[in-house]
Length: 187
Image 1: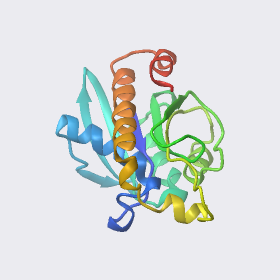
Image 2 (image 1 turned 120 degrees about the vertical axis):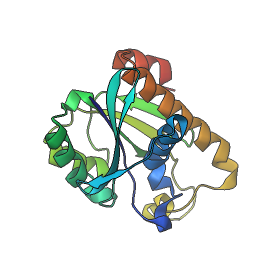
Image 3 (image 1 turned 90 degrees about the vertical axis):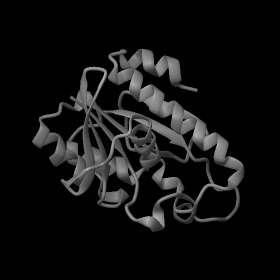
Image 4 (image 1 turned 135 degrees about the horizontal axis):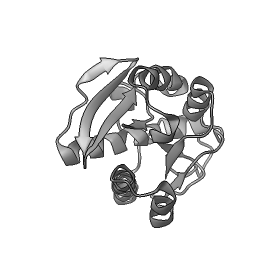
C-alpha cells in the first residue's frame, strides 16, 4: 500500500495559494482517475484507491500546514503503512516556479509542514516531491507570498509542474524504483 500526501491548508480561502500546491497534485491524480476524497478521518480527507494493481491512499491533511504530521502519522499507523511507502508533496521556495525535485529523504528546509511530518513520524526518511514556487522578488513577507495566489503568467509553469509531479508519483506506484523516478523527473 502506498500513501501519497499533498500538503496544504484547508478551506476556500487557501484553495489556490502557492502553499497549497501539494493539494494541487492530489487533485490532479483524483481528476485523472475520476477518484474522490470520500473519507474524513485522522484530521484529513483521503481516498483509498487501486492503481496498476497497487492499493493507494491519497491524503490532504485538514490540520493546516504547520500541523500536517498530526494527520499523516495516525493514518499510517491505522493502515500499517511503512515510511518507505510514503511520498509527501509540497511547495518549495528555493525552487523556481515550475520546477520539481524529488528526494528520498532529508531535512525540513524551513518548511513547517515537513517539520511537523518529521516530528510526528520520528524520521526524515520519507520520499518527497517538492514543487517550486519561487521566492518573492520584492519586499513581500514570505508568509504573504506563500499564502498568495500564483499570477496568471505562471499558470502554465504551475500546471506543467503539477502534471509532472503526478506522472512521477504514478511511475513510482507502478513499481519503478524511486531512484530511477528521481533521475527521470528531477529538473
